[in-house]
Image (tube, rainbow, N blue to C red; front, top):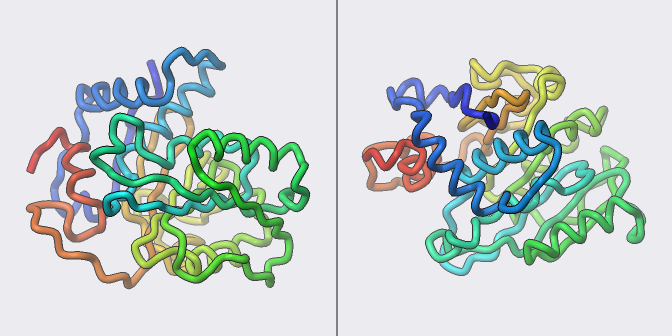
Length: 266
């Protein structure tokens, strides 16, 4: 079996009394994601289980943007770009989600040389998604990124990235808060070791964690049976848009996304 849902938890989910995703619904959504990303794909089973879990989760959490919007994403300390493809809607959904991944920015200590293997690999993955790649080497925590304030729609920390940041963790999260738009989304894919580095617990909303201290609040977290947990954060203190829906207006998950997650319940 693939890496199935073990936990979908936020404080807001608990308070609202929303029921968890049923196994049947997860299988149905999983089939759709598999068609988008994994047709005719053969690889190590454990690796594929993790890829499937990440794709299925981000498939729910992607932002809802305006028609023909061109979104910008940033990834910290990437190695192989294995999740870039999951930061955009599948081909069948472009018409409904109506936005595109226009730019992919990679920040990391190994990204100084334009002809390095890491840069070549990431550039190939970004180009395959129709996104313009940009790279910035970053080793000095006091150095600001060459990215405008409030200009990035999504940020990604893949599993292992928080550990590769090391002593730059605090500076990195400070910069992420600076460059993310008010409604920007921060996704963190975490192994057990990454979770320890976060210095918080998923069950209590990562209160007191490095994200909490940097000014982010956890919106949702999903734990799989493949050893990964995915968290979705946003900036604290951002005024939420009022949406005329019965559910999901109090914690920033778009109602269309949540309705899909909950089998269309309204």
